[in-house]
Amino acid sequence: MLDQTAIAAALGEHYDLAPSPAAAERQSALYARMNRVISPADWAIHAPYVEAINRLKTERNAVILAHNYMTPQIYHGIADVVGDSLQLAIEATRVEADVIVQCGVHFMAETSKILNPAKTVLIPDMEAGCSLAESITPEGIAEMRRRYPGAPVVTYVNTSAAVKAASDICCTSSNAAQIVAGLEAQTVIMTPDKYLAQNVAKQVPEKNIVWYDGSCIVHEQFTAQELRDFRGWNPDTRIIAHPECPPDVVAEADFSGSTSGIIDYVTRELPEKALLVTECSMASNISDALPGVEFVGPCNMCPYMKKITLEKVLWSLHSMEGAVEVDPEVAEGARQAVQRMIDMSRRLSA
Image (cartoon, rainbow, N blue to C red):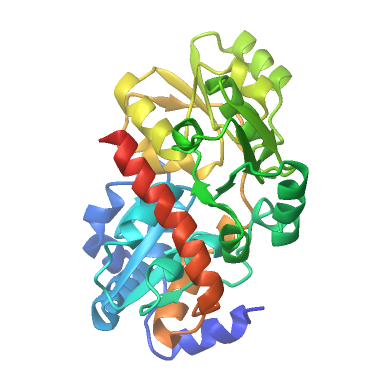
């Protein structure tokens, strides 16, 4: 576990990280991307960290990949690439920098390392895990194969390298239906998210989809009744759900899609009011770019994603600690599963 007190003291010896209106002003162009959701006083606290991190990125020849669930000060302030799991996996294959800092959870950093074995991949907090990833093991994959012999295993990227290596091909929430439909097999095993699998089954009825009993702690908490109640109180609100939500929740939504799909939908449709049935930072990160949209209603916070902070990112670049390593044999199997996903997605989208 990181000793935050010791880290703060060590960083204080090298950087002036006191709240600074001057630093905030120097970083005003970045602040303009998030000033609807971060107050000027808070930005004066964040700005010295943002300034130090962006300077260190140049010194270390580093690039920061950030998931859509990161806080606005990370998403807009220091990230070089933002996106959902598929976008980050694809961009990881194009990185030319020597160092990748993964602002997301551990399986994402593993994916970047798998695709860039010669590069240094850092995660600012090794304890930034994922309840969904931890719900499945290679043994779980083997059990599913025994139950459904000959069926290919499509594994969500929200999994460990070892689980990916035990699978045939990976998928993300944005391409899961496309991947499943593109396989020749009639019966397809999907792991580990049962709700994603059930939602994909409705999109690809010609396939017999069987699934593992896993779920995401963020998305499984939403209920259909909650959405019906909210719509009753706010009939003019567009409800947009992530496919990791239970099927009855998705059925209540006006649109369902991956994090990138949600962003594309809201940007295209520009509803007057929108309820994003997903992780809380989604709305915060697109709020300033869409001033005509009022984001309302409940959301759920991911405790793992929120382990990544500006202070931890600065420490990882300063100390070069938190390097992610993957056993070469496991990495090769996982790389093949991820690369098959990327290749199939590109081919089917062409």
